[in-house]
Each structure stands twice: as C-alpha cells, then as structure tokens.
Amino acid sequence: MPDNMDIHWDLQFNRDEREKPVMALREAANVPYLTFPKLSACEKIEHLFTTRAGGVSEGQFESMNFSVNLGDLPSNVLENYRRITKVLHATPEDVVGTVQTHTVNVRRVTAEDRGKVAVCKPDYGDVDGLVTNEKGIVLAAFTADCVPIYFVDPVKEAVGLAHSGWRGTAGSMAGKMVERMKLEFGSDPADLIVAIGPSICQKCYEVDQTVADHFTALLGEAKEERERILASGAYLMKGKNGLRNYLEEGREAGKFQLDLWLVNLILLLRAGVKPEQVDVTDLCTAENSRQLFSHRASKGKRGNMGAFLKLK
Image 1 (spheres, helix red, strand yellow):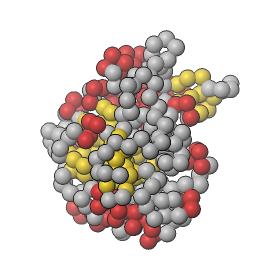
Image 2: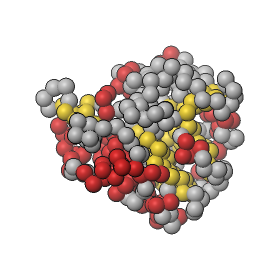
Image 3: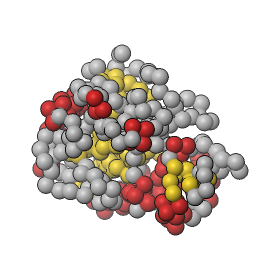
C-alpha cells in the first residue's frame, strides 16, 4: 500500500450522519496506521494511532503490541517500537510513555526522559498524561478500549497525550490536560487542536448505575454543551430528541450505555477548547476487534495499541 493513501481495510466506521470516515488509514514502511485530519493539517507535529497489524508479536498480542506487562516478549515489543518510530522519523530512544493506572496525573517530560517505557524502565509511575514543548520527543499512550486524547498547541508549540478510561474521564482528564498545558506553556485553550482517538463506542459500552452516577454528578444534563457541539458539526450523532445524550438506557434495568467520546468532548468545551477544533473518532475498538485491540471483545486476552505524538 502506498504511503499517504487512504485505505478502508474493512474497518467498520461508526459514522451515523457523517458523509465520510473521519479517520484515515495509511501505511508507511509496511506499517498501517490511523491519522486525524485536523492533526494532519498541523505542519508542526507528527502523529498516528496504531492498529493490530505491522508488528512481530504473536498469539493474543498479534501483531503490533506495545505493552510488556501483559506477557508479550520484550524483544517483540521493542521491535514494534522500532517499526512505528521509523514511521515517525524517530527511534525507540525518542519515545516517552505513560505508566497508566487510571489516574488523572500529568507529567511534563523533557529530553532526560527519552526512552523511558520504550527502552528502559521509567523512574515515575501513576502517570496517564504527558506534556512537552521539546522537539523530537515522541509521546506515547496505550489503549485497548480506553480513550486516547491528543493535544496540540500550534501557537506555543507544545503537545500533550492522555489515556482516559472511564475513571480518568470521570476525573476530567481532558480538562486536567488543558489546565496543565496552560500552566506549563501558557497555552490558550482556544488555540488547542484536539483529537479523541479510537476507543469503545456508546453502543458497545455498557456500565452500571454506580458508573452512570459518576457522570451525571460530573456533567448534569450538559444541554448547553451538547447544543454547541451539534451546532458546530463536531459530533453529528443524534438521539431521539435531536440531541444525543452521553448516557442512554441500557438493554436491562440498572444498565446504561455510556458515550466516552461525547463526554470527553463536553469536558474539552468546559475547559475552553473550541468544538470546531476537535476531531472525534468514528472507530469503535470493540466493533473492529480484528483490526484493533479491544479489552471487552477479547475478554482481556489482548495487547495494547499505541497513540503517538511528536513535536517536529
């Protein structure tokens, strides 16, 4: 497959009213990967989100897995890093990764952190978000249903990357990332370009009353934000009354379908990000478990994909 060529690759896009898929599937150096249009238009960064293909891992980790702690061979994971960083015009020694424990902790990384997670053990833990303004550092976060969120400040030339599962989302990881970029780099939220990456969709993500209560306490009805989002065209999925809710009734009593994509978009608006500057994925990991790792679809027998972001 030629580099920079859009390929459908039998992916099931969760499109609803969108005229065409949001994310583009591309390939370079025999490695397929996904990109966002708004991030691709920013000449100051390189980014991608991996698929299951293009690596050397085997079994449940086949083939582009980035986590050793799930049982994969370290040599295979390192080779996967080598392959993906080649696409990013970097090396594994340039990668700095999260050490994810479903927190809302954010770390500013520097050149001294290069290689941590990818080629050496990090001297930090409990970090689900990373920010930097140093060029050449490749930020990395890892998912298999949870939400990766990319942040780019083209004015202050800074980037951030977060892992946000339901606990991180309930703790407003998206908002915490915006606040940290304001603190560290003087970022104006209105300047930020953000992408919400492939993760489990609302139709596939059933939660119980306890989890649902976390989000109703956090967001309430979010009517104003939902109206802004709908008007902007940033997220076109509608519900029965014209505005889709982030919580819909589940298939049985006491169960709910949670839309992590929409929740994170609402949180970004509350943090001052403009809805028209956010790309929201249209790829559900559970619906595309042949091409993307999904914890729920595989019942935990899986590897992790990587979200990667680099300031040129």
